[in-house]
Image (cartoon, rainbow, N blue to C red; front, side):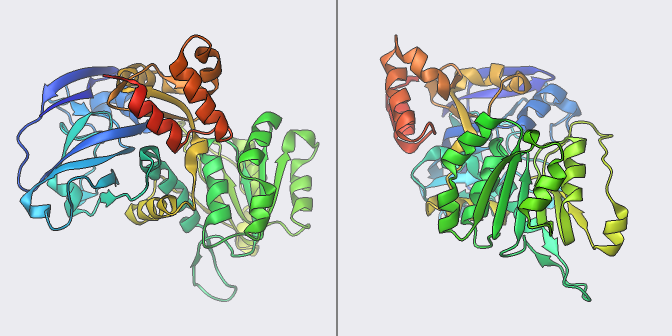
Length: 420
């Protein structure tokens, strides 16, 4: 079977090519990929080439398919896995296989599996490690977002508290406690708000900060104060730029007691120090954002580490259980990460988008692999629609859902966009 895929040959050398897949083996699965969301990790892999820890040294001779946040359908199942998987079944993949200690991962290390391809062969090790995950939801883009959502799920599970006088780590945020999400209305921050409101373990108070009124208003229109209240949470959106002393205002919002849990969603030194300053006794600070500076540092109050039992955690990605939870909650309609998506495009836009990802504003860039379409921001649909009925219809479908990408828009795109 032929496939069209974006393959990595070396540093900044990505090529969209058509080639023949090898014959599927008895311990493999043939599948088609419908959607993939482009991750900054793919940009890092493309910019580093063989210097990247997951990219093979011989990538110039044996190019790999990029993309690791994907969702598709199974076409054919090898005999080894026929009792577990069936043709027509939708799936997502946990790319962190950890197979026999190897760093190899789909989207980085393999020639015939990756998110930016029309058809793929899923190798045996993916199934061996229980990383081929069935997905029962209707929207493919939700399956693609399960990997980034799992990062959010994982960071909540990584929080912990220690009852005084014990050495027991109670994992997760403090139930009914006070949670602050600092710089919390970017794409991943929005996902963190969604999870806080709808997860089994909920805070009693959730304060979300930023310094941009428009972004805060947008977040408040998606995850409303009323919706949070219906789930037993007092939700406050706060522009800390409006206060001479943001720490004092945040402490006032907490009733003067401080916060049990604080998540810092941007790699900014003053924000980490702000988060540290508002922790209560046995408070947990989670540094979510991954800095690119290997020497990135911030000051912490170690007096409070000793006497107030403050602690800090950080996570990089989610595990398979986190991804399963993400898929399950999305399939049940409990999570809606649509707010993460700001752009959509076809497979022909992947090379340029990946290589320029840091320069493109907004959140997640969603790719529909069987389609030909320039990467387009959702907010551009209205202007483009004045001369193009396709974008005019997409604009109406997005506006119908409060400006968010949605299943109706996805179905329309899949039925009407030009095939690649």
